Amino acid sequence: MFPPNIWAQFTASVNRTTNSCESFHSKLNMSFYTSHPNTYNFVDVLLQIQSETYIKFRSKSIRTEKICEKESFIREQMIKHERKEIGNFNLVKSLSFKFLRKQ
Image (cartoon, rainbow, N blue to C red; front, side):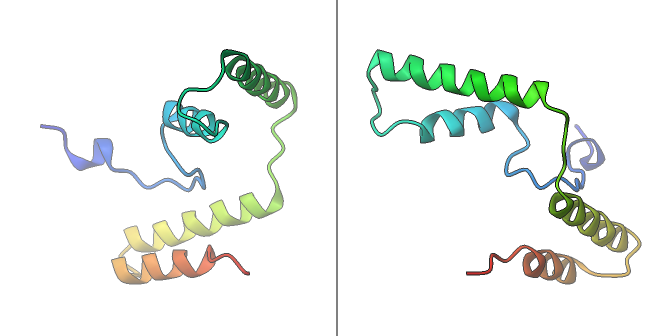
């Protein structure tokens, strides 16, 4: 019913999730140690998240050089893949090696 070019697109974003609601829910869940927190703790966490959100909105969108570099690399690799210069395996391989965490 819906062709893949509508719902399956490449993105050069380094976000862990594409859904803002999922991201918020994940952050909220990580803020608690129990499944049913105390009401006061719950309100404190909501106020903390609200403060962080206000700070982010008020501050200028400062993108670090590292994030810009990663997004540029992803974009280049996706363009190569779309032009059939690299295959699926090489795309995944290049992206996975780029983002390995050094321990």
